[in-house]
Amino acid sequence: MSKLNQIIAVANGKKTKTTREITEAYKKVQKAALFDGISRTYQPVDDEGETFPPEKKNVQYSVSDAIEEVSKSLSGLFDIVATQDWANTKATADIVVDGQTVLSDVPVTYMLFLEKQLQDIQAFVSSLPVLDPAESWQWSDAGNCYASEVTQTNKTKKVLRNHVKAEATEHHPAQVETYSEDVVVGKWNTIKFSGAIPATEKTALLERVGRLSDAVKFARETANMSEVEKIDVSGPLFKYLFNTTLN
Image (cartoon, rainbow, N blue to C red; front, side, top):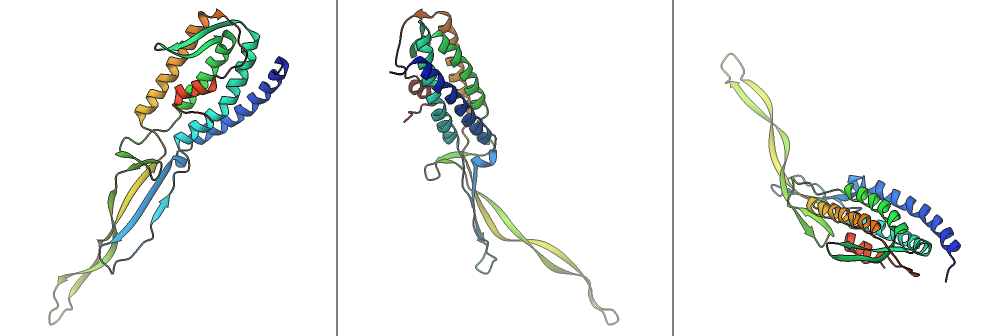
């Protein structure tokens, strides 16, 4: 069994490392281009039409990736700080949300830490990108992201035409005016991809963070005296917040 001073020393290093990792994840969710993908194929109107190679850009990052990275980074920190705080105090209470006990016998000192972490998680969830409401999205198992409906746009090219303003006569040549006309030569079929999530899902996540934050504050005020030794909090916390199971 580790001594308290060893836990404190490890916790300080873990806090520094986790802060760096969370900062990197937060920066990535600000880059909308990482969440976007597209696939475009071209079909000429006829066999003699000009051809164009397909265009494709894969989704480089998704909300599920961001949640997994943040969850894994925070899980070790949550557990080691819990071990430290549990050893420092006997004041505990259950954290209950809508009648469901998320964590039992939580020390007041750890609840103070958890309140601050939940504020950071709320900021993280608030920054998650949502799907463009102007598009109709469906989940794509093949791409492991959302895909829009296929849209079709025309490919045109300018063709020169001649317009006879005046026919030729015995004494004057014909008066001809040249003009350009846009002619459809093919069609682009476009599918947009996105690693973002529906706005309703983001709202639900924010509500869950808010309810858990309120429950932590309430539990802190009504804490009871208790002793604990070995603590595992990251599993149930992140299962509640993001419905994920940490390895």
